[in-house]
Amino acid sequence: MCGIVGYVGEEQATPILLEGLEKLEYRGYDSAGVAIYDGKKLEVAKAKGRLKILKDMLHGGSDLKGTIGIGHTRWATHGKPSDINSHPQTSVSGKFAVVHNGIIENYLSLKQYLMRRGVAFVSETDTEVVAQLLEYYYKGDILEAIIRVISKVEGSYALGIICEDSPNELYAVRKDSPLIVGLGQGENFIASDIPAILNKTRDICRLNDNEIVVLTRSGITVYNTDKEEISKEPEHINWDISAAEKGGYEHFMAKEIMEQPKAVRDTISPRIKDGRIVLDDITLTPEQIKEFRRIFIVACGSAYHVGVVAKYILEKMTHIPVEVDVASEFRYRDPIIDEKVLVLVISQSGETADTLAALREAKRRGARVLSIVNVVGSSIANESDDVIYTWAGPEIAVATTKAYSTQLAVAYLIAIYMAEALGTITPEEYQEYIQELETLPDKIEKILENKQDIQYFASRNFNAKDIFFIGRNLDYAMSMEGSLKLKEISYIHSDAYAAGELKHGTISLVEDGTLVVALATQQKLFDKMMSNVREVKARGALVLGLTVEENKQIEQEVDFVFYVPKTCDIMLPSLAVIPLQLFAYYVASMKGCDIDKPRNLAKSVTVE
Ligand code: AGP
Image 1 (spheres, rainbow, N blue to C red):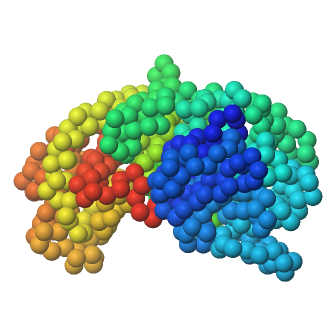
Image 2 (tube, rainbow, N blue to C red; image 1 turned 180 degrees about the vertical axis):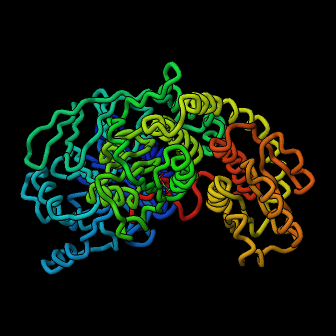
Image 3 (cartoon, rainbow, N blue to C red; image 1 turned 135 degrees about the vertical axis):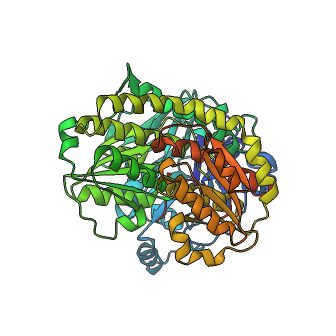
């Protein structure tokens, strides 16, 4: 998964590209590079490592002169991170330079085809095949060459292309990888994501698959693969520039944790009118809802953890059986699906390759697909029968927080909406659920006001080597997210366990000083959880308890307690997740970890 920026205008391109790439580093940071037309030829500068290395090499961009160029930050898929495997990749004569996000799945056969015809390759990347093919097919018409290339390559791509023979035109094309066009005055841009160009223009248009855009200083032209011009509706982006910056916080993750009350409020409030849930975004009718015999929930990582919570919610409210799968497993287990199945797809980026592939498999088998997505116009959103957007705003930190919370909020909306249509909840329950839902943002706010308590506990335990998260029912679902949050940003090994399952083996790992986070928010299982707490305490564990405010008796059982405000049991995950996020954040912060860009991870995994 990588970041792409392109510029054509009157200003020096390199500083603009470097600034845009800085905003995209969350998409990948194994290496970075730029290609600029300097008035005579294409000049390429690229280097392994963080963008700063390239910036220092170019003295901030002053070394490379020219007013048209492309840039790239890489998350390696084919070919290890290295200077030569960095993008831009060029054709053998240097005439074409290409930046790419995605995977060319048939690159090896294409590479062999070209090598048999004498083309010399220098890198291990799939992307170089695109640059070489462009030169191979180029007979003077770049658009024609691009169309021929994309007819040959299989897989996913967002491509930025410049050619020495056409120094005033920047080309771009996409399939299954995100790419937007920025519209300026006397200048135009391409980028993988909006934050890269937000300080230059708020007007964009989104490319669809297999649309080729030609950018010049005076404007853009979009073509289909028949070389017919396509008109595109521009879109004005209202995000504050601060929304894509850190806003005074040390990390994007801290900012995004604190944004959750607003993000959840922004996501639910427009969908509750006069005490009723209004889902204008979807075409699903009550009659269609009544047809569903089963629901599958498919996602990856934290989005999958939302799905695990949503299973409990949907089954309790709608009485429809629900299965939850990680997307990479779903698509290969031959799921039993037909038109009476609803598949709920959850994704922040809307570009996760495993999730997108699972969505396509579900549709191929006849399912109705409803997705919960944060990025408007993303591939998963575009390919779903219905999409309900979370309005969390841009989420930059690799570890998701506000997107998780808003996905959960949408899951509640859907469950209540469906349950009313099915008549499986009474009108009184319908109103109670909606009223509770509307209190969540303020209750999240209240938890955040006490974040220093979690910070204190984290400061005493950030050197832990193994941490167990245990819970029952919805608390078990929450323990998964607590464990992942901690692992992915603090690099501390952690496990989530059904509390009742611990005694069947894993408790052998509990010894003096082992840290156990016991989630005990579910009232009906509180006593059972206290038994599990005693089990681990008896083996020397240090226990952080997490429960609702009135359960003061927990203080007799654990070493430290964090309380969350009361709400109905089924909505407690929206509150319990906040201290878990804070705990992970403070532990990682005290360990000095790279919180927004954890090692080995990328914000959106657009490769399988
Ligand atoms: C969560 O903190 C991780 N960054 C990761 O598990 C993420 O949730 C997963 O890759 C799914 O991403 P998506 O929501 O963009 O599809």
